[in-house]
Image 1 (spheres, one colour):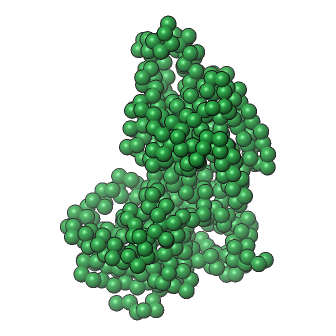
Image 2 (tube, chains in turn purple, cyan; image 1 turned 60 degrees about the vertical axis):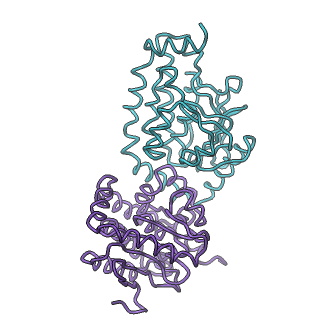
Image 3 (cartoon, chains in turn brown, green; image 1 turned 30 degrees about the vertical axis):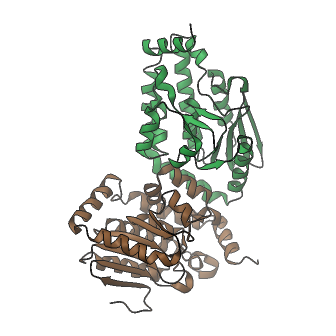
Length: 257
Length: 245
């Protein structure tokens, strides 16, 4: 069992497992440490008896996306971290998508960029009306290439194109209207109950039937082919390394400069 | 028949045949294709809108009816397919604003756009099977835009839908309250996109094209299927009936 200060918390309650991204002081942004622990947790779940997995974030945010401090070379001093993070995220999305347990993203707060992409990888996404979701990568000079194939599968190609090119963020209600989330709680306090209802409903289904259905959907929509997602990591890393992207990130991190 | 101006790396293209509700003639499509071909590579966005009361009523059917060989129809189908493909392949975002109506070939232009806005009451759709024309030319682009079920429904059902419904199925991305504000809203979105760092926006558009390629790679087959019917008996009879001669 995980300890309360671990980067990823994993708990099991009957047929429902819950994975919590636990870096609340950084809005659960994905660092190498978070991603490594996330990979390990999903590996552990491969042999679990759970029928459903809920993914959520500790504190106010779900996941703020990539750790911008780590990918801004003037802060980290290491230009290779961005590529490492993107490659790890790419593999994590593939692993999570093919996990033979249905997954529910319970978006308790901000789900931004890669964080919102993770939600799209899940089989079901739920949030509340005031959560903030979106793909502001283009606003920061970045390209959301790793998550784009998943966003396209979730939203449909045209709506995904609009969301990823326009950038910015939207409310939980707007996200529900465009199909980015499948169910909506009226208020943040009501999300745990809604999540519980959905997870319990999913968990009542036969585990083999759920896994077979998920696997068939993954086969039909090309989710099992890693080519695009891996190529996306390369593309995203090459855009991240450009002086233009580094300058835009620097301006975001140091608004006073 | 086409107006094109460039300012601050944003190209504004307008269909300009207002007395014909911007209906497409072969000459107009040639002009549009060549305007798009001549755009510089360092643009940041294009807007495509229509002058007059309506965005585009589709093909100039009076011209088609007057040509029983089907040659006019074939020229329009090929021209339209080329324009949609060229717009899609541009490495900068294309914003298309519909006011009034985007019917048949006019609706097909949406397949080349990244961001589509429309006035709430605009009418959109493909009533072309009524006149014996197949909208197959649009199918690959519709499938690369909306869900397969919605695309199938839109291409086969001749009913025009309003923009509010089109927004629900993802064919339109943003609604504008009145037709007069469509062009300024398109311009505003273009400026917003142009203000973002260029490399990321371009990489994102090109990458989305690559992800969507399994559908758009069928563009040639779609065109071929539409071309194969041009000038057949059914189409000629229906076009002639439409024009009462």
